[in-house]
Length: 636
Image (cartoon, rainbow, N blue to C red; front, side, top):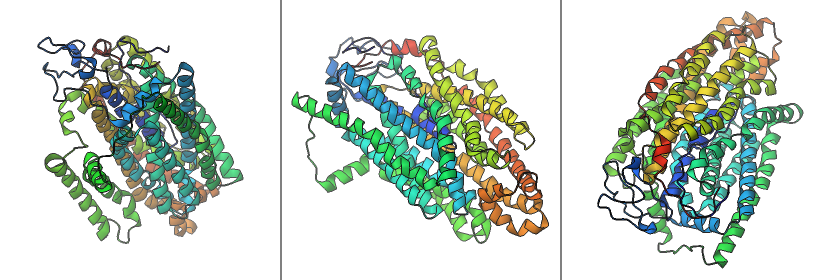
């Protein structure tokens, strides 16, 4: 229901998810942080807007302090757990937040509905693109004789995407939603153009990194705009609805990819979305621009005052975004994780000088990051203080360990389905995406449950049987003789528990911080997920690159042993041998051995996830949110 400014108490929400053959899991993170991730700035908005205050765990109601003094709407203060007001006594709104508030005040009911539909379509196209490219990625890397580097193409993208989340939040707070949205769409388009024109796996990896940051940012900003349009009480349900495009993308994306692969090539698949994406995104930017003009005519739009030179601004934002800390994180984790996938291609393997140097330098940079953040950073982007809260620590660790576990056995799962079970591109993707399909269905149901039940800890603990069944049964069924139906069953179990955990873990973070701290706390949570996914990819790549070549040499017929390296590097070469032939049987046996190791390693992280659930505080978010007040403006 749409309404004008109201004082009805909102309720805290969580988020939604997106999917993709290999990246569907972390993309889900981004939306759920998004979102995974995505929530950071949503609550950041709310915390900074006029007339919007919060009381920590009901200590004091509606802005009253311990002295009984009542603040005006413009001076609402936040109260810490000990009952004292925070150091930031008044709500500070940055330019981007002021601008979006001015824009939403001139929106009519119909304008808001149109904006919701347009953003929904952009989200659908982005999700469809992710599904298409996920189905084609193994063939792209194989075209450069680098199928084994499948994990490498994702590791850097995941790390960079996770680190950039908070920076994106700050950028759109400073410059505005429309400007940030346009930049993220541009990054997606640039990434797709580079993918369509890539000439080697290095260029493809760079293109994928640019695309991933744009994708993360786009979904993130869409979530934030939705947050601007809704109350907290209903936001979780709305974000659940936003997951529904995953259902269509699960079935449509793989089929589109298969048609491009059979009747054209992967380059045209990427090129097509260079045209489709801007067509759907342009109306959103235009509507924002028209709303801005209307707000300017009515005198509601705040103009930015330029008080710094270019160099002064560059220095200011470098400090504000903690550029040094971000680069130390990105290069530290990248140098530490990439050697596990590159060692088998090095001249002397693990003894190669640059492999050893990368690992050592990675450890040194991560240590330098901790020292920098602790003692030298003027503005810390990594909030160590939040890790002292057991709920935030537990939620972040659940998210991180869950992605380590899943990506360990998921990274090369699609290739396994194509080669071992001889499935077509579409059918293999359907099996793989059963995970995200179930997650998309369970997301809205979880939102409705928590909306009325209030507690999130025990529903999360109750997912333990699904986690155990979904992961442990893979050890038994991940073998060449198993029917595909059993693999689908395991994917559905995994989609149930991961969908619930991703949503409730965010709620555990948001329920344990003040509004002033939600953006930073959720960015921390998002970073744990991104790093966890990168570690999982690194583990999978290390197992694949160090075990599979030896298995192929061992199992292939004598006349094909010399071709083991060529077969290892190209999935199309593997598929070229007929089912039942000695060569194909040898490849299948080698895949089965490696995949079994991956699943066993992935299972080892599952008990850590379950243990971390018990760190959460059992907070009733319905009671907590009854003390919040809602901002002014036209909202759902």
